[in-house]
Amino acid sequence: MAFVAGLGGCWAYARIGAEPVDLVRDLSVGWAFAASGLVAWARRPANRTGPLLLAEGLAWFLGNLQGLPVPLLFAISAWGEALNMAVLAHLLLVFPDGRASTARERRVIAAGYLLVAVGGLIRVLLYDPTADSSTSYLSCPECGPNAFLVLHDTDLFDAVDLVYRWAGVVLTVLVAMTMVRRWRTASRARRRVLLPSWVAVGLTLTFVGWEVLYLLMPEALSSADAVLTVPSDISEVAVPVVFLVSLLRMRLRRASVGDLLVTAGRAPTARDLQEVLRQTLGDSSLVLGLRTGDGGYADPDGRPLTAPPARAGSSVTHVDTGQGADAVLEHDSALGEDPALLAAAGAVVRMWLRDARLRAQADERADKALMVPRRLLQAAYEERRQLERDLHDGAQTRLLYTLMTLRRLGPRLPSGADPALRRTVAEAEESLRQALEELRDLARGIHPAVLGQSGLGPALTALAEQCPVPVTVEAEPGRYQPLVETTAYFVVCEAMANAVKHAAARCIEVRSRRIGTRLVVEVADDGVGGVDDLSSATSSSSSSFSSSSSSGSGLRGLADRVSAVGGTLEVESPRGKGTWIRAELPCE
Image 1 (cartoon, one colour):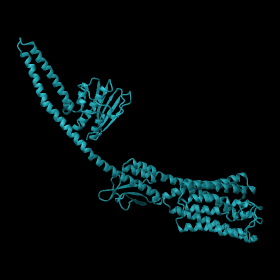
Image 2 (cartoon, rainbow, N blue to C red):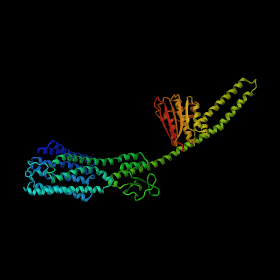
Image 3 (cartoon, rainbow, N blue to C red):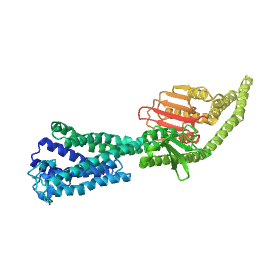
Image 4 (cartoon, helix red, strand yellow):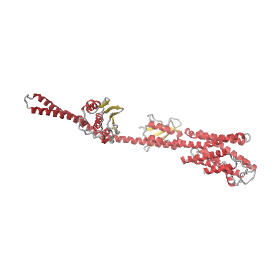
């Protein structure tokens, strides 16, 4: 419709001798309004500003139809020649919400349409273009005839036309006064929205004032009229564009709630959420208050909030999660003029509160669930340590005593004793020595004594000395909980056993250090790598070194053991580039 109306109006305008530059300016203004209206309508269909912009674009070309040789079209065009001004006044008074907020604004809008409907009709009933074509902006004595003409009275027409024009001037002043009143009573947030439109409207009103002066003194100002035509038209093109930009800025501001939603989904702290709320709502003084134990509210730093707000011009919005108002937003009262934006921000806070409550409940359940395997692991640790003591104090001590007895027996045999008897004693001594070594290895695998006596660092050093490949150990001094030390020790045991048996490593690096409240243990080798699954690497060698780690059932078992004490296990093993294992264990 806008395209057809523009082409039709342009053709009619060209018939009466309009210059190409005049046609371009006319099309630019009308189509700018129409295009801006279509975009605004598509982006914000519930807002009437878009349809009004489109109506302004259509009405812009209505007056040009006076250039067509059709009496009925000429009459309708002359009747609605000023309709675009009434639509523009309507648009100015309802922007940006698309509706009038006071009865005074509604009366001014109705007066504009009434002036065009009634005053324009009376005027066209008396308008004879052949008698005085200058009363139309087209100045076309050949236009017409007027199908609505009922009385040929030039003096009466001039009087009606003068009243009609001055009524339009009065309405323009009323619109300006209403807009000034809206500006003075608007909040800061509202003024930020209205400011771009005011700049464009100010330019337009400046040229409207010029037209009033030109109406009063046409001969004295005729030379300046041609100079101001171009900037006048440019300002008219800028009006719809600025309206559209202002509307889209409001939409983008509401769309920024999406970023707020993403931020809330990342479980930020209350202080971080407050900062994002300030940026999204454009209120640097906003305070997020959370319910305290005594039923009051406090900001993220723990300072209590007063009710009513101590700051002037502030309002409070309660955020109810279904269990009472768990939070409040103390903000500039200007935000109350955009309830949709404020409601969206409240919904994000509500989601954050519910998410925080669910996370707390999940952590509590996880802690309870973690206590069971941790208690089992603690019990197994105590059993292993007790078994190591029993072996050391019982069987190992008896074997050692027996070995010492045999060693004392050999030298005391007579010089003429049977050689076979001497060989039997020597074989028994050697067999007993081997059994004692194997028992020591078994006890060390169950629970290394050096770990309990000296700590993790010396235990890792002792473990490295038994490894058949070079091992570099960097361990910070210090003691940790026995269960944590034991878990870290067997992580290193398993990693080193896998590096020797499966990865064909030529060197191994072991690091142990404390970072904050975590004990971090890392084992890296230069083997073949390629561990795709935690359960794919296991140790079951019977060598003296791997027997120390025979308690593990592979990296999958280690992951379960580490998880049982509240830790994490990471494995990186790119094929051909070695394996890196990192365990983090809570040490407080």
